Length: 143
Image 1: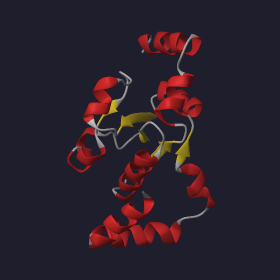
Image 2: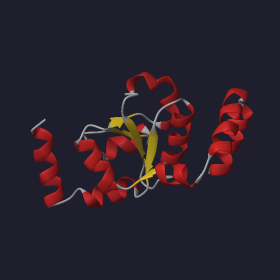
Image 3: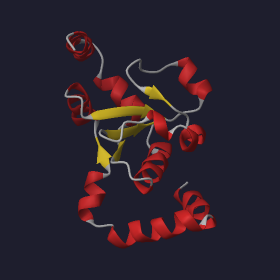
């Protein structure tokens, strides 16, 4: 998957240059900052600091999802950037994290602060159940 992304990026000179620059500056700090787990992401969401973006295909989103997320399929992301808040960290999500990582790289190259959910939507669903789900919904109603 990452090989495909690299080929696509190198096919387009504008992205190739910015991707080259991104790679030249890539370090351990960036490696840490590009990832986020459900617990931290949910806490930052509660504080209004992050925006979740579900980048799965529409068919996947229609079968199950989270009401508090923006739903922008990966293949629609370039045409829908104006829907994202540049003042927040964009947390990209998919069931695992492969497409979320692709979206994160794209957003980063477009000037957004972005991270991908390392435990994916499946991990988030596991985290937000039972008491956690109840507390999350109650806290969101207060805002």
